[in-house]
Length: 359
Ligand code: CP3
Image 1 (cartoon, rainbow, N blue to C red):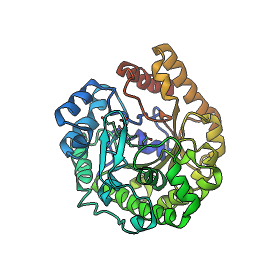
Image 2: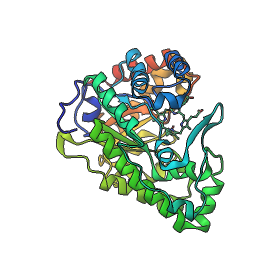
Image 3: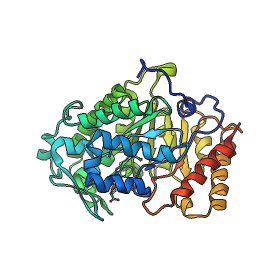
């Protein structure tokens, strides 16, 4: 928010503005989660993931857990992208080992017509309360990242009713009733903009949109059903100017083919997975946005020497594609962490980023 002072560690905010930093900032997607024994203990006490996410004090506790272990440069709100459809009435639940599911998926134009934007200080107040509690407890040490799913990625779960391998139902809808799908994407976009604006008002200092399933679309379908809605968010979401601006990062999985479009969307940063080199990504985006990424998460299964080597190679690739400068890079994985990863290896990674990128 414009009224609060910048965090003491403002490397992430500076990097997203492409300003000089003493070393490249690093945070990790899914940095709070099952790979940490203290997370598993909190979840056991709370009873379930959702009970934890819906309780602001518990959400705050698990948000802070990775920061107690590692000198990360940002915190990310502990929540989920599926809070929006849950608040729209689809009713989110989890089956152990099967991932997220909805009790009331939306499968036709009539169900879509009944959807509305949830009240951000009503059904979704627990998310905003979590942001407020975390900001208070962080006490400005590092910035807090808020987030949302992309309209397309949310629609995938809403139509499929859970995770999917082939996205058969939503692709059938795209082919057979594109008008209905556009209506769904449109209400999702309104909800995402309101959700991110409310997180910003509650104190989130950086915002990220996860387009996790953008890469399952053909180019023509991506340009019809995902990109225009991401662009609308980047253009319409009010986020201030100058040093008080709240930067927006668009992360896509398997969407490197569209880097130029994402860089022109109005976003401040673009998150990239590990299927493209950061040298190529930096050349193709040519300083129009900051880049975030893109270590293959599986590198965390390697030994410490391998981790240091791969970290250095990502940092150097960015510099090589960015005219020899390291500015404008936020180090991250190309996607989230997995439950079977070794926490000690995360420590090695963070230290390697800081050591190898020191200016
Ligand atoms: O990064 C962080 O530390 C912040 C927390 C965060 C979670 N989910 C916590 C979580 C974030 C940013 C998300 C986003 C999210 N949720 C995405 C987009 C990011 C991505 O990975 O591409 C998606 C697709 C979801 C939907 C979802 N929620 C899935 C697929 C799962 C995993 C189900 C499983 O059993 O593996 C969840 C649950 C979830 N969200 C967990 C966590 C830590 C695991 C819950 C648990 O069992 O403890």
